[in-house]
Image 1 (cartoon, rainbow, N blue to C red):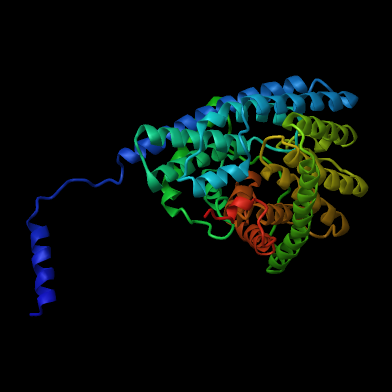
Image 2: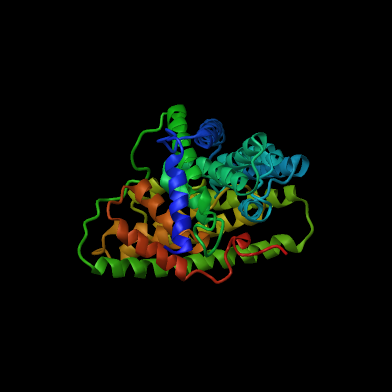
Length: 423
């Protein structure tokens, strides 16, 4: 018998001689940590949503021409909060800290982020609450990790799990929210931090349950698309074609944002002046096109159920892109995922107007998938999120559209920190 085989035999014999340890479950202390984080994330998201709805209803009292001064005032107030309390940063900073700051998100920026984003979202800015929630719940994960003296990948994974819990609470999609928190971190490698997958899933599930209990959320779709019936393999080709058109709109949004950013950054002016100017512009757009106001959570259903003329649809598409770009570049706080879904839905309705024989649900959902995957580089989570939010039963066309948007996206990602590396 060879020496190597003898060593193996001795090793296996020593294992058999050891007493059997009864430990049949994967369940352990770390699971409890992920669960606690999810519960905390659900509570944070629930309280944030309650306050957001209250403020939204209060500010919605102002209509007509009054939206112009009220949005300007809210923009000024949000800018003053950021100026005096501290700049909480944007999604770029969150990605940057997770990747290059050992996964640490600083909780000290949370008061500024919560207050400023509540004003920006509630007053009608074209950004949603997903980014603020991700920042707050992600930093809660960092804080909890430090209490338990976690380091390295364990701390990073807990921060990512916190991000997932916040994102999941808003969208009601634990799997989609978990994948998004991983995909958003890199423009190319979807699971670069694969060790965070299970923590993110666990935290997301607990967060969703708590959030649902707090705001009495029911299970079901958010956006009501007409019933889609599969008509053959040709639908896959249509999905790719629609996504290509959506990608063109995605490129337009990206370069519109870069252009406006260069204008706002050309002059050294305080943040509250930028947010005030942004509020004025957003107020004017909202006055002429009220459906472009807010981030689109409820407005997408209004868009789908109201017979807008083709001329008005084109104007809605154009000015919603401008509104999102102004909101992003003028210092207003929030996330652009749901607003991009709104843009995609508008484009899908325009396509259906010119080609009425095409199923409207197919054109709408593929455009939503294509533009979001193009801008955020998140094809997997985009597919799952849209399937969950719309109840679209055929999964594959959405995936085709998402991958098309992903592969036709600009080489330099819109979220710059997805690509850059610190030296």
